[in-house]
Image (cartoon, rainbow, N blue to C red; front, side, top):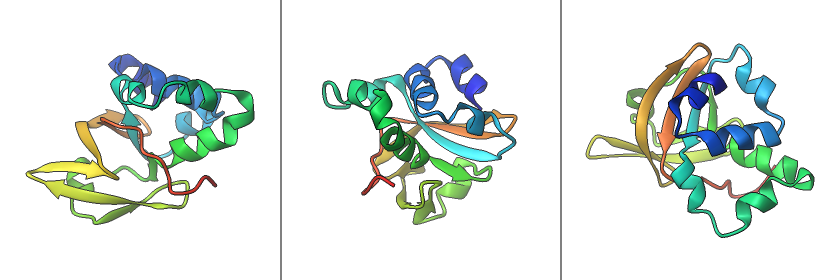
Length: 136
């Protein structure tokens, strides 16, 4: 999963966030996982300084909760997800799903690159960083 994301080239910040959150081993594990990975451009849309704050060691739990809001258990294609009205994320909260003109979005983030296969799941690139309603 992480090696696939790194090889893609548009998920560098996501990879760094996974590392800072201590989730590297989990996402390299057997899975399978479905990951909605915000692109580097999506992370750039966060308010100034927000990412730096999240990357501080004392905010590791908050960062992990946010990242887990981007992960589903199982291997789900964009076509599968487009049939749902919500997706239960690994952090325990459900994210609303919409299918508009054949395009899938999750919690308002548009899937910009779908169905990037990896050995332990599938990655869908999204155009914004989703925030859970509460941090676990």
